Length: 157
Image 1 (spheres, rainbow, N blue to C red):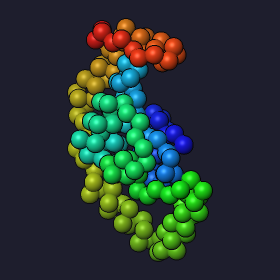
Image 2: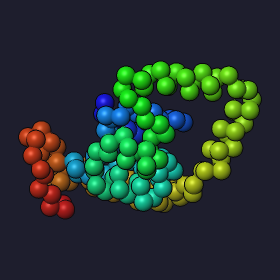
Image 3: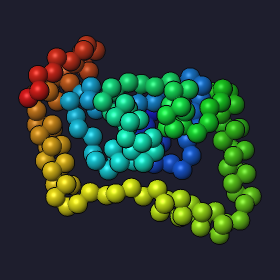
């Protein structure tokens, strides 16, 4: 089905992501006038790179499973009827391996891919930008347009 917004962010937090062929994934804060939290954005940068994260966040597009796999947002795709069986098969394959080896390799992978984190000043700057978005006319317009099922008319204020 759909993994949009928080559901997509939750999926991005997982070690592996499997999707049904008919799945749609995306992050739509730009369509609502919201600036997404920088920790969430960092998860996507770590997962799909800065270009992929920009495409996801700046377009607000819902991507089909095939495109999500091309971007690295999804590891595997299966027909909806086979998704659960595939997921359990992979879980069993992982569970059959040596726990200490798995733990060590997961730790190594996480440490080796731990990109630069923000300074306190940079975090404060981004928090200020998020607050600016949260009190903007654009946010109210985005919410209203969403509820009215129409395209928003953003004005940059």
